[in-house]
Image (cartoon, rainbow, N blue to C red; front, side, top):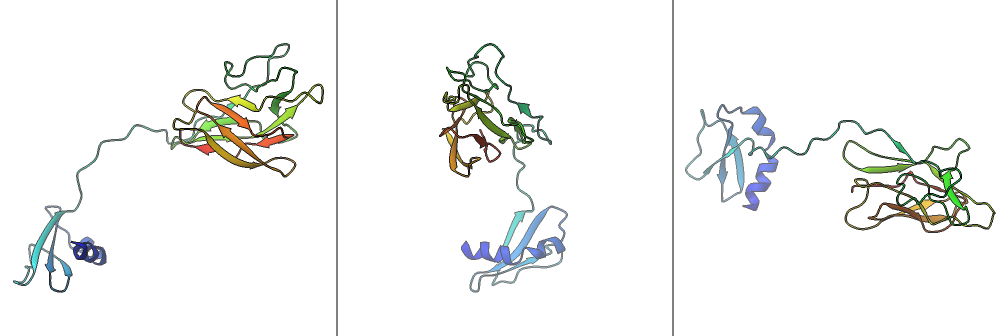
Length: 200
């Protein structure tokens, strides 16, 4: 059987040159040498030393897959904290997280892309933009979680970890949990999210 498979690969070019009205491919296989030749069944025959093989040009058609968009969806931008209050970012999905002492995450600004997430046409989730740390007073750290992704944008089979290079040049890690939490491993001045991409 292995010899048949190798011979099929070597002579595949011949199939296109011999059209078959019944959409079947006919070939002659010589067991002693492993030679396989594709023939026109209407005009040619196998010799007594050859075995005649026949198979369909195309297999059965499989089930249609789920419909997918041919274009990526619009970006969902992560919103800032509500002025005058400290919302819970795990319930206010898609908003930046704020710490107990007003240390918070937000868009870094300064001409850099804002933080956003979206799905492409293949269903992959992508994050982008530059998240920045803002503290008042200066020693008030933000929470390590930057924001939470909503259902449908979360990994289903475990936390995903990505290596990023923070603004100071240090290596940092960004985790995306099954609860949607997008979390930085350390407190950096800013954390780029453009490398984060996964299939839920």
